[in-house]
Every structure is written in C-alpha cells, then in structure tokens.
Length: 347
Image: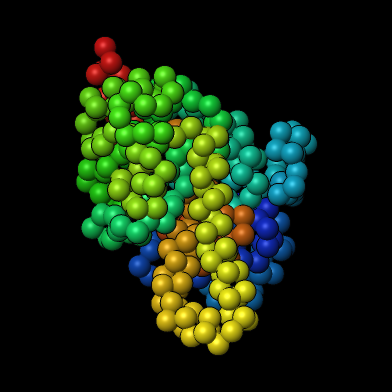
C-alpha cells in the first residue's frame, strides 16, 4: 500500500514555522504511521528547523515556496499578490496528484479561498463547510471520543436547505471515518426540538434528512445538547456555528481565570479548589483543541484539514494523523456517495 502524502503549509501559523516543522518531524519518527509529509514554505527556514529536531528524512520532503499569507492579511488581496505562496503551492500539489491531502494552520479565510480557487466542488455541493470538533460530556463511538463535530462554523454565513442537507451528509461521513461510528447521530441546531421549529430552511431540511440512509437523523437539537453530546454531528449555518464555536473555545480560559481569582482570596477557596482540581483538569482536557489536531473543510473534490492558528507541535502532529486517516478512509468518496443518495431520494 502506497504511503499517504500530506502537503503541509509550513508557513503562516501564529508561531511561525517552528512548531509546524517540529510536529512533522515528530510524526516521521512514529512507525505506526506510514505518512510522508511535504513541507511547503521557505526551504532555508524549514531545513534550519529540521536540524534542531530528530526526524526521518525519507518521510519528509521540502518544497520551496517564496512567500506566505500572514494571519492579519486580507485573503483575496494576499492570494492575488502571492500566487506562489506556500498555501497555494501546497494546494496545487494536491490538485496535481503529488499529494493526497492539504493541511494548514494559516489564515482561515485564505485557506478556504485558496482551496476554492484550486479544487472543484463535489456534485451537489453549492457551498463548502468548515467543520470543528467541540467537547462533550458524553463520549462518542467505539473510541470513546470526548467530542462531536459541528458544521458549518464560518465558511458560509447563511445557508439554504440544500446546504444544510449536504452538511449533514458530509459531517456524518467524517464521523464514520475519524471516529469509527458506523451510524452517526445527526441533529439540526434549532430553537426547539419540534419539527416545525426553526427557519424555513431548517424545517425543510428536517423533512429531507429523514429519508437519507447512512446515519441516524435525530431531528432538531437545542443549544444545551451541544455540550451534552447527545449527537455525533450538529448541523447549522456558519453564522450561528461560528458564534457557538468561539463560546466553546472560551470555556476553559474562563474556568482558569476564575480559579486564579478564587485561589488568591482565602484559605477556604484554596481548599475548595483543591477538591475541585480533578474536575477543572477534566474541563481543561475536554476543551483542549490540541488533542483534536484539526478539522476538515468539506465539499471539495480534494481534502483540506484546517489546524488551529496557535497550533503547537502536538497539534500539528495530530492534524497530520487526522489528514492521513481521511485519505485512508476515502472520505471524499463517502461524501460523494451520500450526496448522490440524497439526489436519488429527492427525485
């Protein structure tokens, strides 16, 4: 079996090239993963960083790119002015068959736009979706993953019925491949569990999703269901999803700040925090996005994994593992098959 080849945009992350290259170097030493990583970016900076870390050079390849898109740059302007940037170079490697999947921790808007300029949408996909994993109290699947998938979280602000149905199909496919859940539970995020609640697009999507095989459609779910983990995949439009995601990302930071404030007030608070330390640690672990690595941008005919901009080496390593698993699990083919099934059922 041929190695999975990942095109990794080594530039553009918040902390620069260091953690990105280190993560790839660490993965190259792991014999459990037959993955080859193409490190795309400033060749001198990449080679200099590689010399600082143990690695297997036969599993790493450096592809020079003269520029990159910064986090604070406007995506369209930056991509117009830098056609040979690391992001677009990595995307073209995937498009041309020299790599199987694209991974980037760079500017999210630029990653989505760069992919849309380089890849084609799958048949039946009007809008792609940026997914994200979110922590849950209830574990999911045979691997007991403490998180579920939510999409869209920002690629598309407002969605129609077709978009929501496609997001459900794509999210269920991802859950099957990554979390090994044979029949994922899928819910539509709405303002009530009743089928008639929600926008016209949500109400219409509710009716169509009941007729699609390959996942268990549980109907509408509410905000409280997100942290409870009552479903494996939550479907929503990007405007709502992005707000929810930012709220979830802030949970652990707020908990830590409250703990610091309470710790300095009195011995009684210190004793109480000592008793709660196990629970606080559990919350921190649940909301630690570094263990999730990255989340997909789905809907293209090629795979894209978007890692967090603040990714450290551990997060990059995990993002590369997720990327390889999407290839090995034929995620694009599964999405294509699910969309075709919806089209047949709608006739």
